[in-house]
Amino acid sequence: MKFAEVKRHLNKPDETYLCDLIGRGADFVVLKYVSDRDWQVAGQPIPAGTSTFAYYRAAGGSVVWKMVGPQGNLTGYLFHICKELEIQEDRVIYLDLLLDLWFDPTGECTVLDRDELEDSQQKGQVSKNDLAWIFRHEREIVQEFESIVSDLDHLIHRLLPAPGSF
Image (cartoon, rainbow, N blue to C red; front, top):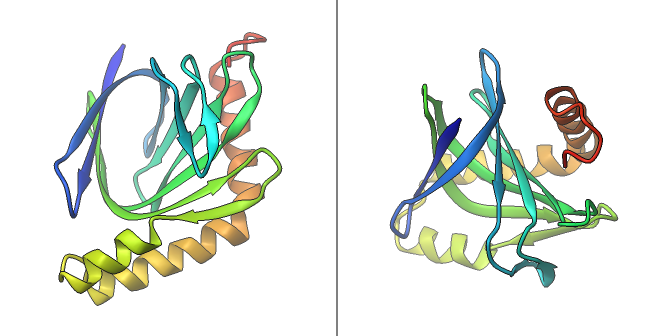
């Protein structure tokens, strides 16, 4: 089943991606998207054919993307700090709050887009409450990284039990 991810932005037009619904519960959804082009995150190449497993929790302050290369190798985890996450029947909608955290396969963290956040703050696009939310979730993600990705990995394995599914 196709499921839409609608990523709202503070400083640019919204983006919509059509994904495959992998599973859902009362307060979460897991989607899969396969990239049709090469790109990169924090200098890490993300080749075409990479599968992204996206985990959305209704009460969460971030969206987590687990990226797995075409040969099944872990490429990394990308966390988008967000708010106003809403799971609907055929879509998930959230407001991206600019700051992202990239964890490479070794678990090393790179904070992305801090300059974009500062620019948006100077333009009045980010409130003091948003900043407090962003920094609180940044700390929580770094402190709880291993637990978060362990939970996500278990969830993916439960939803996609066949070997080599991801």
